[in-house]
Length: 370
Image (cartoon, rainbow, N blue to C red; front, top):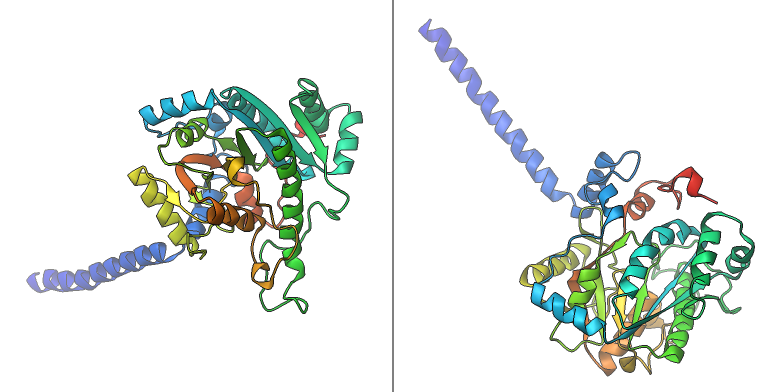
């Protein structure tokens, strides 16, 4: 009997060791995988059919996210906003109508926090023509929203020089491809977006608000207290970027992100920098960023514009925000990202990255679609 028990004990020891080894390997594999890949997998696990994600649940649609803003700074920012005139501006493509319908009440609420507010929305010509005759659906809803205050809510069409509103080419450029000047087809999107944003910038300079709030109109939610936090900061800033996140808090807009020396760090380093600044309650000084929403003091941007042309070969791989923001950085300084000023890209952006059959209005009810 003693020999039998001894044999069992000696048999269990290797099993325990193997079990510990497997646990160690599984842990290593988990942390070895890139954070954004892990979050993507978690997103699919939590929302295989719809938007029932931990972050983007039904409650987020009904109320704004709770801000972690410092209370004193928040109150100071709220007082400052009441003294300012803001222009809210953005590009609205055909695939953004559903998202904008859900974001618009939040922007309207935000606009009330300022002394005065205006909107300029830039949309394709054919969409504006359809909007005027639409009997129901998203376009009719947009038309009625504009009619509520035609003096303050402007929806304008793109210039004839913009040949294609939404090119299908990728965001990034392959430095090995292109013509004799180093350009490739996939870069065209940045140039056209630059031309469209320059139209918005021209309108903004004509209206001459105290602050230009440039926003992606397909966002899921904005943290209004986070925006107030930026106005309550003691640092003198000319451009403030939002901390645009998706999935479980992953920073999204790395394309426009540049350090003060002009370099673009890897995604996980960008995430780490934002997390560290957020813990410290500090701003992140940069040469360029965006994050889905940007605040601009136009007095610092009078001589700057978006890259609608190709000034030189070194700009061939840059997104349209980089040239404009870097100009402000070089001429006036004061370009920051505020980790507290969060906006949420929402699950549709994650789905677009993960699923090949993505549809822009996947989260809308059938009755809402025009």
